[in-house]
Amino acid sequence: MSGIILFDGVCNLCNHLVDFVIKRDIKGRYQFASLQSEKGKALLKEHGLRLDLHTMVVIENQQAYTKSDAALRVFPKLKGFWPLFRVLNIVPRPIRNKVYDWIAHNRYRLFGKKESCRLPSKEERSRFLT
Image (cartoon, rainbow, N blue to C red; front, side, top):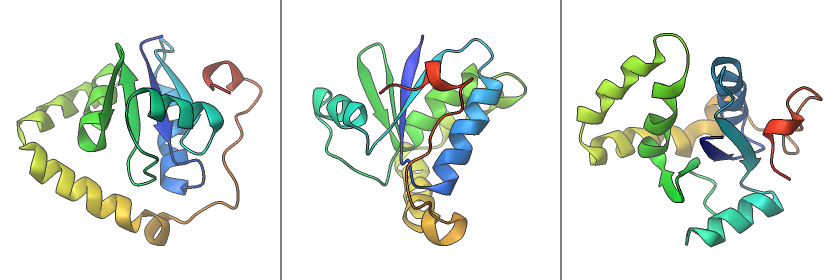
């Protein structure tokens, strides 16, 4: 495994992102845990992060990345043309994060919210941390 993606388990956008990554991460580099899970909370604490449901977190090589930095860690490792998104690294972080924050702040209104956290299918269970 290359890393862990922590996501808001009740956010429809976040759940679609997990599905998106699973489908394109053909080498199985990433595992997943919801921010609300005990494992998610423990990983946040281990990396000195507070529970913040307004950002995804990517952990790679014992380093935690948040906001646009987290997304830009994942996309280059996916099959298809997604590695081209690494060009967004030239956009200054404050600008990238301002866009990220706007989407994160409005995600429930724009994409909806589930009543409970996503449960992985039988085929996906090995990729989810409990």
